[in-house]
Length: 579
Image (cartoon, rainbow, N blue to C red; front, side, top):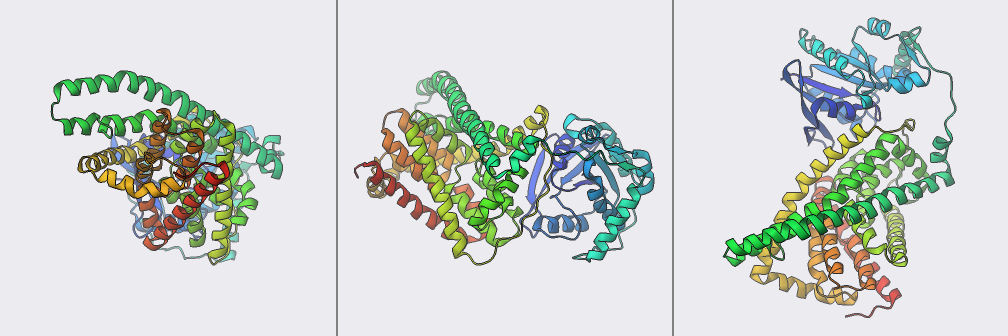
């Protein structure tokens, strides 16, 4: 089967093209011997299946970050039939040197001038045919978010794939290019573009772009995004309105009562009936949590995250946050995994691979485990505490204090220095609904593929504990610690849920509060401890894979101690008696 790889700088539209070619059918796997992932899908081109790879963002074949090193190794080791180099047409002089580098080493390349709508709006003019003649390769103009040029690009790929195999590459790129070589390549790119590329008139940035980078304006804008995106859309709409409709009305009043009644009538063996529709049943707990509570919240978060991603705001947030994250031993690039952690901590630990040093990856992993709630957890806590705004502010202040103090302390303990920060800032743009929905559905599918088997296995495990009486033993073991926090024994199962999955635990907390088992102060204490509690089992497994067993266990122990200490302090401040 023929193989096509998508190559290019970050933020040029590779992922959009990948989804458009593969139809969201994605396999994500580590490249052998590394911790960086390569996305793989299958496209139908010219009536035959073609393997398409989405490689990590790179600026050159001379690697600086781990992502670039993996992209370089991938290009050299895979037998690729076509490279599609996706560029931002507005910034072609800076991106063409990579095209020349790829051609120098014998790769079959198609140059894609993406974001042509923005380039034309900015007054950029490119003589496509002449540029293609000078480079000796196909050059295609596209605006992928609008679907413009996609069919032309597909035909160009088919043409390259149908050509005779290119000669075997004889030159291997050096591990690191000399500065003179880099300057020479940029000079050669400038000569090639002479007469075929005309930049638009220099235009100042808009007031909104300036606001995103302003020390005070950026802070205000971040609060607006958090309030509108996380609190109103994810917390109120996703965890409130959608959960009420799906879990409260559709499942709670229509589907599950009917199924439970049918099972009670036709399934006589009580243990099996309990497994399906009992307190910890596959339907009444696992299925209900996954589809009735978790799905609407996670989908609303992924929608908002795709909007922020496609608008170009996240790189600007990273640039703005760099000065603040310096206190925590991190640079602005850490904003991306930390923000993604608000969606799923497991996915966010994977994304820490983009950070330059091991020290920064450990710091970011620690903060993700300690004080970054996943979207379902965050949405439910916002929905539960928002009727009592003073409790919501206490929860938010406690989590922020733990994030800052924990990060500063860890930064002082871990040896090493903060890596330098560099990041290309794309322009702000209005995202298209089609691209947002593509990303949202792709991430939802990935999330549900991961979460549904886990939820069902947890239901089976809890059913076994209940049937054997071990659940009562676990509750008795946890009861003294819960009593010190002023919490009732019923919360033992919730914290057990939380270890398997944070969102699962918070869904259990939601159930307990809805049935009146907790008062407002106890809900606040439980919310604080559950947010700071151990990383879920999936996130812990990812931490072990990424950071090693010793580091993962050490982080988990520190997080557990800090979570208990924070809950104890909050109980004392609120004046809640121990039980």
